Image (cartoon, rainbow, N blue to C red; front, top):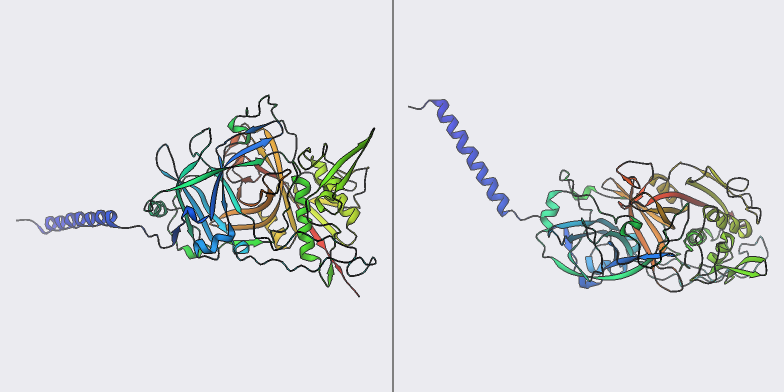
Length: 513
């Protein structure tokens, strides 16, 4: 006869077997919850995907592994039914047929979806100095233009180094009201959607812009650069599962300014254009009764053209009414003959352009500059002072050895205009080029930091390419030494680093009748 202990042990074993069978059955029949996400039909026109060709003065990186995804804010509401939300792109890896999460929680803020054009008064008429409307300002372009596409870079061929053009990709576009947490259930849910075919277009992106001890390989053929010339494309880290948590807890911390103006940029004109876009934003925001913060030039394209007669060389704005043309004139870039020909800007030219312009035309646009990165001080009597024209006593003092997300966020909250310089480094740690852009937004969610930038991806004699980009920013390591922090923020899991950030604060004048 069995003892009580033996019977009890058998009951425990049978119960354990029964429980295991129930768990196995449940795992086989349970359908992942997809109620909080929605798949986007590629044919809606909401999203476009591009393969990037980078071009430099000395060559091109043709049909790179870099992809760019663009979202049309004007089609967001109709396609998703959401006021704001998050776009995710799951790309099928051609080698293993696994779905890779190449775009993680691209935030589409209501600031660009719920578009409301700014109210603009009629152009000011000439008045005596000291009046409430000093001087005359040419009219800017139509301020009711729709929001610019929002874009992010990603790896077209995750896990491999490839070459050649791509016509299609296989994957899924998923949107959600709240950001998707990196948990196993997300990937299981995505696998329930049938894969889609997505068309791939091509785009050209200028990769010069700003110099700082740059060594650019000289090329005898226009397509001789190796894929690591601009570093590897951003590859989000593989899913690191976190505990499941309610999605409604993931509200972002955010600040967004107006994304206007953003003006068509001449070749290699990114430095004066970033400053002009900042100054144009400050004027749009602060120049209104009862305050005055007035600039006499309009947010329209233009160049600081180089003229010469014999041994005399000088710069002049073309057209005279253009804000960026005047900033470019004080920047004094070499070789600027037209919108398609011109050299990059040096570190000191980057400072002298906006300082010289405000010193000359800022009688009713008093400005305070401050920066992170670069030299301890810039401006009158300090680094980058100039004897050829006055900087009007303007000085920018450094508020941090390296740019930080928190500083950028705080400057935007305070209503100041912000621009940054980032350097493009190859995989060996060599700086190959740089770029300067205006930062118009910043957000933090799921413990990640993001910034939003404005620029012209295809600079030159054309009327297209304006965009706004979202970047995750964090210190992923020193270029050439991934995983070894160097104190500088990288853009989107790339070897590109934010080297310099500068803010401009408008000091308004009270208009007293």
